[in-house]
Image (cartoon, rainbow over all chains, first blue to last red):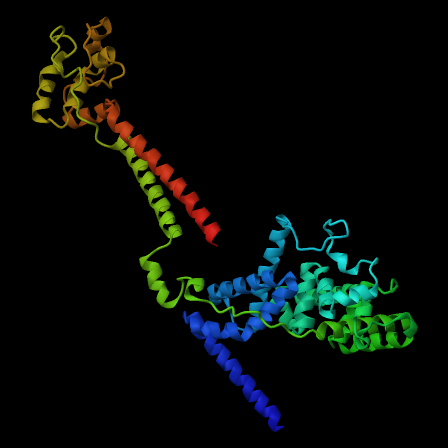
Length: 217
Length: 257
């Protein structure tokens, strides 16, 4: 009971601090805003990385998101500041992904035996490779990231918000800028596709994480 | 595999995992799960997928993303005054475009007003000039009284003169715009002039009536060509400035976000 009370008081103090910092930042206090940046930069960067799949692009997106957030502080109308920030970074990522689609650049992709670039990012699940070879150069996280990148950006954003950032549906709805029903639907479809994708590389997963095999039926 | 399971079932399973189903839907799904092995397997796969996703640790930012004053821009707080004293190119261009538009409208409207309703430049019409060749002709009976008008009312010399010599003037110079009309020899029409206008030199008609009548046929005098040219040039420059500055402002806005 005492620990619960302490946790609740701590949460309230944190919220008050955050509210005060936001108010100060809205009045032009850059130091106050930078304290908010420090508090949320891991979350924002993580979301950007899940969306973009590259460190450099994720850094750019996170930085742009914080600059945009500072300039748009007037439009913050209360509620979850984290969700508000995640919405901004998600939109920045959408814009960048759209821009890349319009002006495709040469991706840093592997080459095959003939030194020809392999065009599809699905190279990691190439069926000609043995599970051992794949297991040597891939980690679970990387596999997961590739499965994420196979998703449409809208699905990717929702699954990253709910399953990786740990947000509830309501927060994710705010962060994604979509209705609650859309979040539910997109999340289900994203998980369905992730399941299919992960099944293709289940050997890479630890035993505890392996999906149900035929033998288990 | 799992082809039998539709999107609706997948959505229900996903919501069930997150405890987002209402009591009724939850009970129904649980009953289905007990009786349907394929659905149970789908649920298990989805649950493990969710575990894998949630097992990912939150990534740490590789660097700080704190904003420097330069990155934050000069938009807020103390910087606001700096913004006011040193407006950006967008503000300047927008202001230039608006001002140019206002001046253009002002000059155009003013020019139209002056041309149509403003006082005309005083000119000496052909009627007022001595006409030695037919001084006794077109003037008619009213001529002596009118002849005094320029000296008594210098601002409106044309009115009286025109009233008296309206017909002869139209016969001599139909355009009535030249202030230095060359006076030709009187035509027969001009010589007949006293018979024509019913209100011409009627006894008892006062000077105000004559002025009113004459206003309807007031002669227009052409503005000097130089002034017209200057106005047109000014209008052209202003419209160019308005459009150019507006487009430049739009471009600046687009490029700087």
